[in-house]
Length: 164
Image (cartoon, rainbow, N blue to C red; front, side):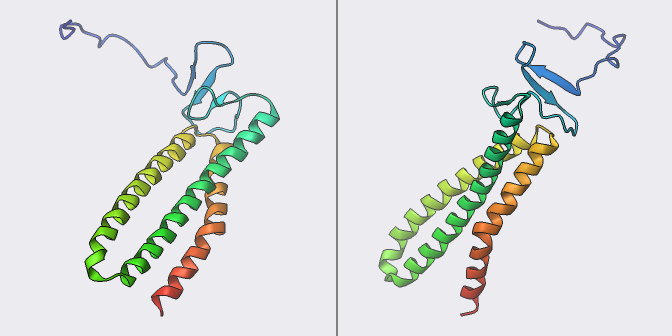
């Protein structure tokens, strides 16, 4: 159907406010606030099945889960870095004739690991797109705690390895 001949220039859309959109069609459904906010009620995290209700327990458990998700991403990154260091040492210990077969396996594992990291990162980004301060703080705390717990140690190991 061709609508190119229709003139919509006379329509005024300035009265429409899309800063707070409700999804799900029913009262008490998901609230999608497109502005920075502190209201944790009825926020859906990634899916409508994970909704923070108006209970303190729901908020607390969701923030804890978000913190663990972010820390888990840092743990995964640390494990990938540890694997890469291990694989490099294994490659150096092998005769040159065997290195290409090992390198092919390492490349597949690295590529899959990279894909998982990208997916994980996009999930964290989708969580952050709630624009909710509580959720963003939980993500930031999770990343910081995860980095502190797993990646600082990894960084120290990497510094020691380069100087040997």
